Structures are given as structure tokens and as C-alpha cells.
Length: 214
Image (cartoon, rainbow, N blue to C red; front, side, top):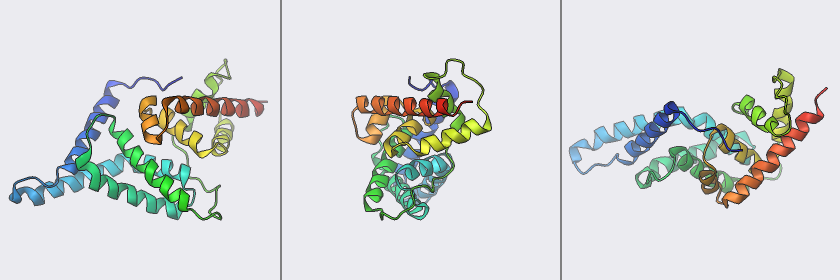
């Protein structure tokens, strides 16, 4: 089951994101007298993009780079790549997808260099676990009972035990609500692989939550 369709407010927010990226990419206009003003506008647009996506991208990077210090370095690389690459943004997909593709690439590069002793259990607070819990139990819990604090805690622990690619898929589909096609582009895999990872993750979460029910 894919994420629910987005409303008008979310679509408007996506359009604003696209304009922010274009503002960053347009920081060097032809007129020399406008360069300073354009750069100032670009820096303001980048700051707004960081405000909107900073926490979300940090959570995504930590799926792949558990070490907090390394993850912060990766995040800085991500925003540098956004600044340098915004002029090449074509707008043929969601702005969020473009940002997460950059984050995915940088995180994987850092993950390959990660020291084996980096702690695997130091994960940040996960975003919007109530929405993940509802989606995870949709297939395995027909009664859809109200989620309590203990159940959410167990869900967080269950998600942390998932393989990184399944955790990342859950965030992109259920929290970021990207289309499956865009998730496949972010993760550099076929759409069928995304569906398979999502299905396996949901089944595993539903099973683990069911085991803990009184």
C-alpha cells in the first residue's frame, strides 16, 4: 500500500521547494550589478530549504551512517552539493526526491568508509512514528487499536532492527510520501525492489508488534 495522496497544501509546499532550489541555482545572473543581490537571495533560499528539510535529511543519513559525527559531516556535504548543483536541477520530479537522491549518494559513500567499530545503536529520534505504526499494522492488525506509548516504543525498536535499506524505504514512502517511482530513483534500484523492501519491512514490523501484544 502506497502513501496517501497529497493535499493541496502539500502540493503548494512542493512548488515552493522547487522555487527555492531554482533561486539557489540562479545566483549568478548575466547582469553584473545583480550578482550580489542574487547571491543574497540564493543564501536565503538555501537557509529556508535547510529549515524545511534539515531534520528529515539528517534522519535519512543516519539510516546509513549511524555515527553522529560522521553523519553531520555527510549532511554538510549534502548541503554543499545542493548549493553547487541547484543550477542543474531540472524540476522533472519532486524537489524532495532530488534532495534525498543527493543525501542517499553521500550517505552511501560515507557508509563505505565507515569504521567497523562505529556504533550501530546510536540512532536519532525517528520522525512521525505514529504514521509508520498505522501503516505497519494495516496488513496485520484488522482491529487497528489505538497506539499507546509502549507500542510506539516497540515500533521504534523494531524499525531500528530492520536492514538500512528497509528503514530508508519506510521513511521515503511513509514519512516523506514520495511516489514509488521517485523512491526507486533516490535509492538507485528498480521500482519492484522498492515494493519488495516495503512489503518485507511492513510484514516484519507487523509480526513484531503482534508478538508484543498482551
